[in-house]
Image 1 (tube, rainbow, N blue to C red):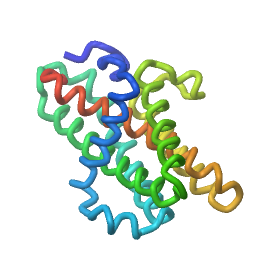
Image 2: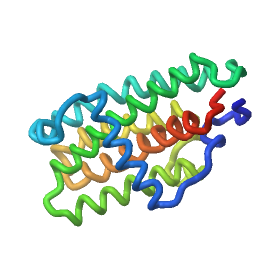
Image 3: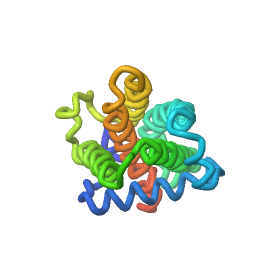
Image 4: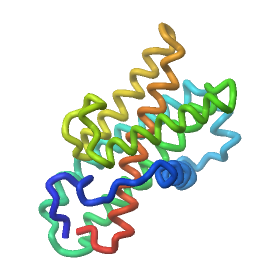
Length: 196
């Protein structure tokens, strides 16, 4: 049974290598929902990928809101509604992570830049999972707050494209980090064997 008022309190914090692997897993898992081959996704260009990710992040926020409201009420172990919500959150956050990652790849001029942005995403995800949201300027970390933060960072990236292009990957990696934290939440609760 879920006992914490904040679902992120139900899972353990992870170290950076584990989070980097979680990011890779999310990107790989996201292919199931996006349905595009990697080469096709990369050809779409960063702008198109960001717009597609924005559409999915709206769905992620709705799923996070539903999960947040369902969890305290569904006390039966492995309740089908809760399992379904977690699976949808896992799949949609994975697809969002895939699109955000490929948007970062499309903007990176050198491999070092991409690695730096991967590191930024991993640090944001780690901060969410170990209750470090306050230094990130976020309210307490229920899933819907993290989903909104992901969308907000993506919109900042889109807004920076004309005025401050150097900030675009910074905002994209922050958005990706929040999405990876949501993916980690869904995967961990599903794997735990007793998510409700």
